[in-house]
Length: 333
Image (spheres, rainbow, N blue to C red):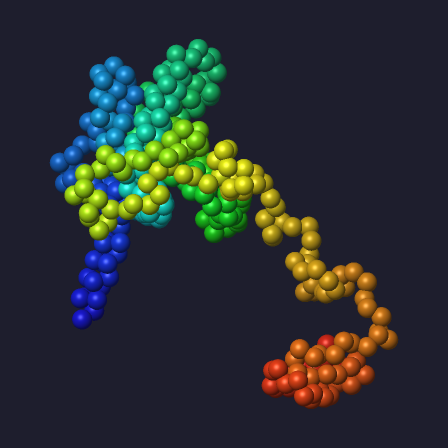
């Protein structure tokens, strides 16, 4: 019974996937299985600048995304892709999501190729700088993984929702700064990650902001066959590229502010206005005069003053029970 229930949950979870995310997910898992049994070797399919530039092996631009270097690598990438990709595909629609992903991936790859070629030709005389540039923008190394496309999706997502974002649960940051902080933190924690793939994936997300005014209103689904549109997992969405927060919509979200102090860094000890005390601290602001009577607690169904700590029942009776005034005798027990 438990097995059937778990199987039903997995089936429902899979059926809820939009078709584009489902295709990327299934292809990535299948390719990783083929890697594990040594049927697919990543050196022939990875993103390698010199092979693309000299031997015109352009398939590497796409195939590199489905390759991964280990179980944790593919796990974290797929978790991030499923979370972002599903929400974006439901918003834009399957056809727009597919077209946008292809275009932005090509833009990201073009920037990677240009940067690696430029760095290779730079006459750098400082050994440390030369090593950093060669490592960050490699010409002959292999790049693999979905993370470049994921950074593209992150940039688009923060321009649709300017809520604060959490950095691994430690602190919250403005949405606008989240992609950049995530890029830096991941690179510091794991220097072996591909900086060029993440950086240019991030920048290609901003390219969507530039393309949006020019592509707004274009119906990408008009080229989709009717048989695919009839699939339950096909998402219609808006059917076009419409991102809130772009420059042509000043009233929309803009990804939030660039910086704001997290709450635990705030110089204010009290989060609420009015009189009060902080735990273990002195009074905040001037204390009220002791001679003034406390206001009646009409909203609680009782009335009393500072001169009496005993509750006096009234006829309003909105909330039954016992109550006492602030500063008057013992509390509720």
